[in-house]
Length: 364
Ligand code: ADP
Image (cartoon, rainbow, N blue to C red; front, side):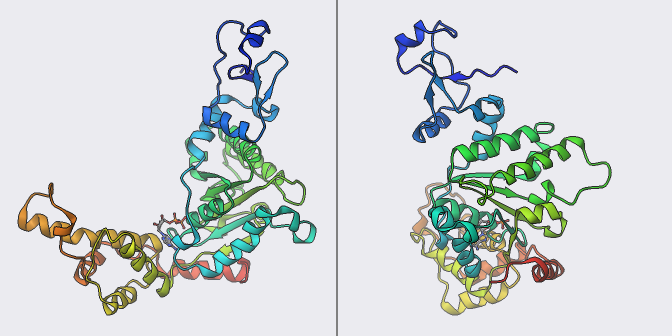
């Protein structure tokens, strides 16, 4: 379709009115105002000879509708996760800092033989903090964070996946430093299905691999980092592995990490009071072996409902109840909650990850 090269109001109204183009009234920008702001902060908006505002040519080549999709649905502005928000995973956090945070902070230092990897793959069971790690990287370097799940690319935007991918990488390059976080990356870059693979999804995959090549830190000074996450690392093909050469195992939280999650929740502003003793905490930690981070979160939420349910059972109404009237959360609340929240990852799955880690995982 037709893509207007000039967008937004002219800086100098009189000039624009005299110039060609639409003539009457303001030209409506087809791009989200916040995107225009972000481009302008980076000096990427120029004034056209006719007095209109022009976006960079690589952007005006794309359909504004697709650009808007990527901007509104993929850009995640809410990521101010710190490393301390991620319990455990100490080794992974350290390696990610060295490998991707430092090079993004000072690209000059990390050139040539010190050039960072083109991409990073985080693999492991669901709910272990892979997304949190991506967000922590982005907050640490004040990068623009694009988060997309590959299955939404393949299903939601049927037939437009290829265009979405192009828009995603174009925006990421313009709004650098950027992190592109692709959840379920296996569904995008799975080993080529010999037959029956949908033509559109094959084209999207090709577009994706080519776009990634364009972000290679050895070939360009663009600061765009790809972080893929997957629960099924075996399904990636060789082309994908070459483009995400560093593969980090993000395992289930260890005992210390589970304890940290518990203490974090109950110290935060003390909104929920507990009567948990150190020995209660130790018991909970022991009984949650095999729980993922998100299982832990769900268990804690469930346990914290205990006092509210009790109050409701004995007194009826919930409205007008002050939090201070509730009894504290006890070990028994956790025991009850553990009936509802079982570990979501099986031991055989863990063995599968460990095996994969032995062959492909980065050693650290
Ligand atoms: P995934 O590994 O599937 O990307 P997420 O990072 O999205 O998992 O984690 C899901 C949720 O589980 C998080 O929002 C957080 O509440 C909780 N969680 C998972 N791992 C951790 C962790 N290591 N520390 C604190 N919270 C965690």
